Length: 300
Image (cartoon, rainbow, N blue to C red; front, side):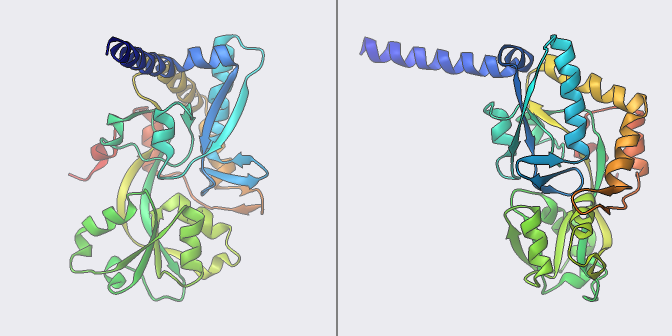
């Protein structure tokens, strides 16, 4: 019995030590000379795959610059950056368990998630919208009655659609894609009549479609959401390092240049332009850096 109790106590202690080690991300990076970046495969121009294990996008490049600053701060001659694809379903658990050190995708900062993870200062304020085929005749939420609406498993977009005041009495069938590319394919193939998601993700997938002119973004803004880079909770030193780096990019104009590069200029692999202008909400977030959750953006 004593042996079992001792074994149990040692197990609890090891879990506590592991949690402490994970909370010291800077120490983990310095001792290993490596860092793992969580990336998305089809989050529009924020984070996407180029194939062969290569990733690109607005948030990917921001994180690469942040990690270059972390490397300097830690005095490392080299820093190996590993790219770990994540999904809407597993991104938070992979950050929590230490598999991913910094998640650079398209994650909304909200009050519920702040209980489990930490967010850097907001780098993009998103508007959730509806994408349809141009010939569908759909221009508003109330025209989705009896239709099939695609969204990505693990996201909150359809919840916002259902809560919208103009969705009262509108009944639609949800169909789910495993990732954003899969959800867009549901729309493209006719298995869904609409795709509800972040505007940047919709615009990015439309820009890379075989025939971009066949699609359009329509209807009311369903919600306004701050999108931010995600980290483990209760690690103030790492959060400060990330925030300081991002704020510097905001202040010296680098972030605006990155926006122009990824949203208003042709991007790989097809050299097409997303064509998404910098919104007033995003400009305001850059002018006054903060990590406020989505609930603070709700209309009063």
